[in-house]
Image (cartoon, rainbow, N blue to C red; front, side, top):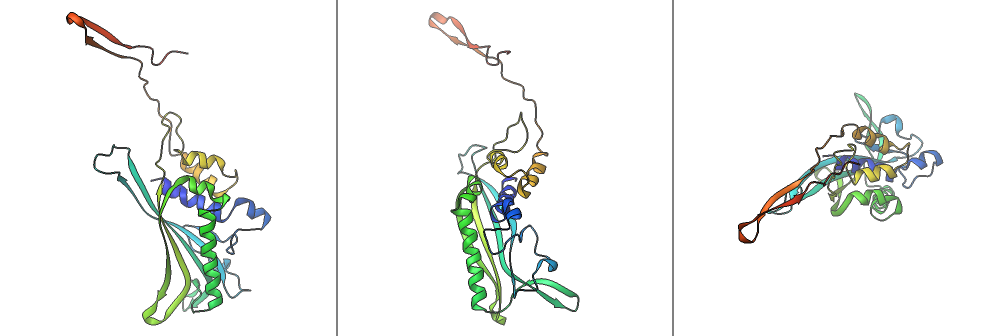
Length: 243
């Protein structure tokens, strides 16, 4: 299913706008550290600060379900889960070497930074003008969960929270004759900055959908019984006039 992947890519653009890569002004404290389907690398973590705020996006489960038993083949509810992992990253290490991890402990100031980051993510996606492309794909937010990362039995708590969005997405409407991306993804794609990460990846996806020639309906004909048993021919043979 294409829509959940498109949703994740557009989320990257909302949280790390292409224009910000030039201006240096980013909408969240994570700055340019917004990752698509991967975690932060050790070399990206600042050694000059006690922690580095970061966002990582992952597509999770997706499902298509009919809208009740009498629903038509194309009358489906498209539900998907998007995980946005917000964390305060640090460099940790063991006998195998250094690795990236979330800050451990109960630092109240760090907790406030993480909470503010999560709240700003929600604002950008759900309320801001920059989140309009995101909301064009999302018909309805089913739920938003803030899932902490902790092992309470051992007293371990980490500065990492997963915002789990369960959403209902707009159905894909394919243009068989033109090929390319379906709507509404196509319209969102066209509105993205030309050099954006999301537009580049969606352009790659568009190449998988080739155009197909469709045989057009040219005539509808039949007969009906008229008064006195007369058979009348009905229909049209100009449904697809030649230009």
